[in-house]
Image (cartoon, rainbow, N blue to C red; front, side):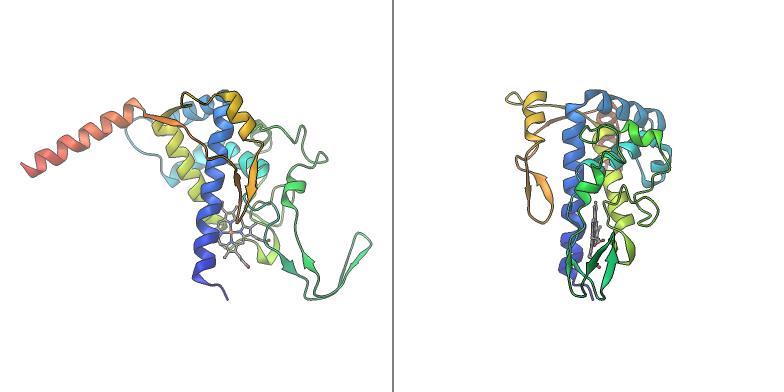
Length: 231
Ligand code: HEM
């Protein structure tokens, strides 16, 4: 049985934390930000907002999201579980009733699966587009939503929310640091996290957003249309 509170907490902070980490990494990797913006302008264009149906046509954005899930899994120890029966794994006996923590952080940064695992590099998933972090069964090297029968029930909603939020932030705004921030300070802060419900940045990410030209003209058109309707 699931409580409404669990759905609300599990469903909001995880996605918001992921988007904040993605923006923080893109601001310290301007080449990644530029490439994602170029892809969005080419695929979505400049006269509408990005929609869910655009996601399959945005391979670089998908790679950025996968790399953010890998590098900053919002729940690095998943959700504590207990084994209902005794089991054997790698020669260890796990008695019934043991509390189990799945260390996603260690799996996602395992050098046996990833080259330079401590570097943020979306290219690794462009090179392996088949890696599906939603499957829960086939690609154990990337399991931000957990795995098995108790994997996150909000996996598709969570994944879609992250793509839509991040895609629209990147597509519709140009981003810069406030005067007291720089790539270096942001890089330093990216190393510090606090672990509550999710592992989020210790310092909230502060950025300046300038609406892109296409958003400004879309807003002007909407305002003039609504004025005409009222008249
Ligand atoms: C970026 C988005 C999200 C991530 C990364 C995420 C991650 C996870 C993980 C790792 C687990 C534990 C799975 C396991 O033990 O194997 C989990 C469980 C859970 N998630 Fe999510 N989640 C996200 C979004 C959501 C959304 C949108 C909802 C609901 C609307 C949700 C509701 C839940 C609930 C209720 C559980 C507990 C399930 C149980 O105890 O069986 N999550 N999530």
